[in-house]
Image 1 (tube, rainbow, N blue to C red):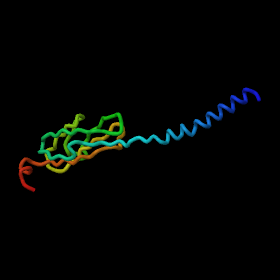
Image 2 (tube, one colour; image 1 turned 180 degrees about the horizontal axis):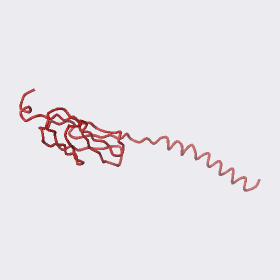
Image 3 (cartoon, helix red, strand yellow; image 1 turned 135 degrees about the vertical axis):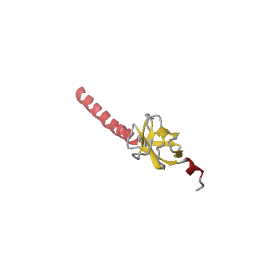
Amino acid sequence: MSSHFHTVVRTTLVSLLAFPIAFAMGQGVKQAPISVAVNPPEATVHVGDKQTFTAVVKGTESAGVRWSVEEKNGGQISEAGVYTAPGAPGIYHVLAISKASPGTRSVTKVTVVREADADTPQ
């Protein structure tokens, strides 16, 4: 037989043997899900006061989050996670949204009270 035939057969066999190994290696790798956790997980803030939140993103190398307040008049939050409560008491929600995976977020409940409300036993 010609040496060309042996080279073709040998190359084909090596390719066929390597394919299942490469395929199996690719199938076995699963990426951990991305998650966002906010600290503190819940807060009570007086009207007009500030509260600093921090976020930890796991499952990705990008630790960045985008902060927002769910309610239209629910206060403001800076890029650094500093929340400023609105002038009206109520329950509001602060969101920390992963920049790497915008569908991944954490919601934190913020109860905004007047000074007098905080002193009243519940």
